[in-house]
Image 1: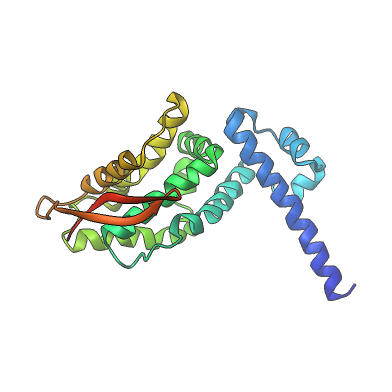
Image 2: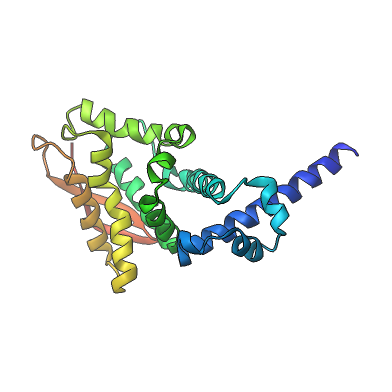
Length: 226
């Protein structure tokens, strides 16, 4: 068997595992962990049950690997265009909009996120070394802001909950109650998220941001000036 043959084999292996991940992601979002049986996942992925066990030892192993896979897939989308070493409203705004776009493009991802958070494995999954290393630059963004006196003196996770986790909560409410935000309202939500973690010492004066949001030019939006 030559090198090209090995390459084809690797592609087939990855395709099958990717199909299992995709099937599990869809089932988890639609039916929760109770519906995530190995037989159902294998059937939806169109692979034999024996094939499933080549990649996963059991259901919990699938959940752990799926979580890691999902985070590694979404991480580049969240960080796209963000200069994470620069602690500023502009970079925060880009992070916020990236998360907003991610949940808008994949509503199932939000449902899966909620499932993971309520799972007995939730704490273990978040503390996975690979996951922690993946999000370390984002953690550092908030650490630097706190060290500079820009952000209030709270633990990094608390700062993230107050400023970025609300994007998922907002996306969930939009799904449940079927409402949309205007561009001006979206900008107001971003500013409110940013202001939630600012120390009182910083100015809240505003100046226009000439940028596109969701493909639309926003001429009259504003940002704090530091």
